[in-house]
Length: 184
Image 1 (spheres, helix red, strand yellow):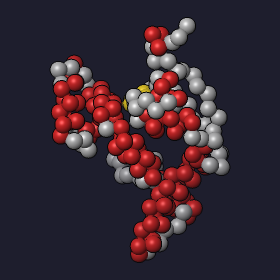
Image 2 (cartoon, one colour):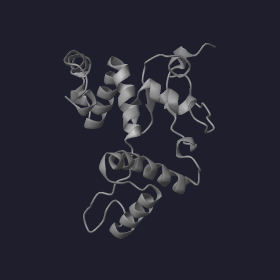
Image 3 (cartoon, one colour):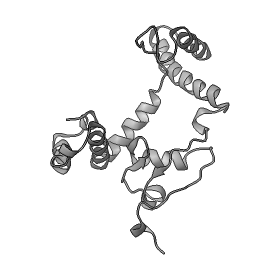
Image 4 (cartoon, one colour):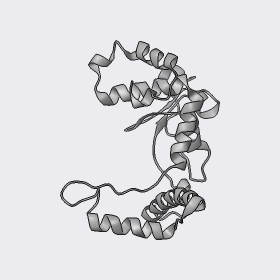
């Protein structure tokens, strides 16, 4: 079992194993994970979209220690950056404080994007992600996952959100996944 299939039912995990089991000997870990994630998203569409939306709601900024007195930035500047972001989104104590701290992580993540890009709203930052999906996935409600170069499969609903539910300018560069899909 890979993390990509951990939340699937036993039957769906068995189906993923059946579909990719004889091919994984030729694949590396990243390709196994991509293929398992793609199949998991196809087999349990609702859960895939729900998990992706929950991950977005749980977004936050964290600083993790790294070797040689570093975080994933120099330790002093990484901590200073986190403190600056935290000042933009104060938390609190108790039950209300826990809710504020959860929201604080979201505000910190959005503030980082806004400050880095110069935009006033993080969700509307123009980003070139090049999702590859069928026209039915983009324009309809086909559950076939989209593919993002350099990342792998993403749930169809999340891909539609990237393209349709934003105030950012959207340019569809690639609509068809194969020439056979094109109606000439």
